[in-house]
Amino acid sequence: MIKQYVNGKSVGIVNASMSSADFSTLSVILAGRSENWEKIAEGGTVANAITPNFRKFSVGKVTMNGRISSSFTLPHLKASKSTDDIRGSVIGMFDADYVLTDKAEYCNGIGDSSRG
Image (cartoon, rainbow, N blue to C red; front, side, top):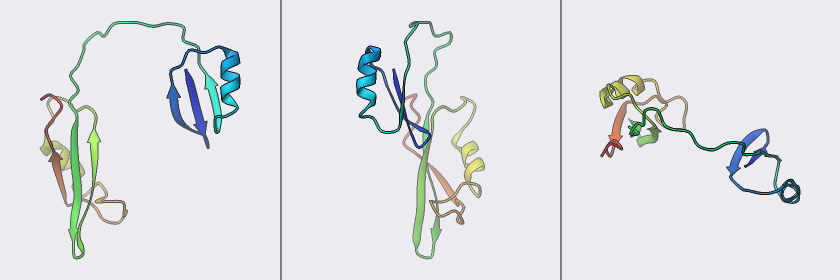
């Protein structure tokens, strides 16, 4: 596995089977710093498989110049939480868009959960 860093941040991981010599040859053309990780084990079992419960939301604010908004995705919500719980955490707290002074006035669910 190759892990690549540019300006101190991880920018990508690639699974590849190669020798140390191959990695040395490849690392010359990669930007930043690269690490070659050796795969030493594979397998395992999932103890309690879960169905992802992701939700996507649109947040924003209506201004005199129109609507400003952005969106975000929560990868997995607790089954006991609802869209109303998210609204309570977001409205007045999250930025309405990429302007840091405007806080969200609304939070709308986009689509449905991944549970189908």
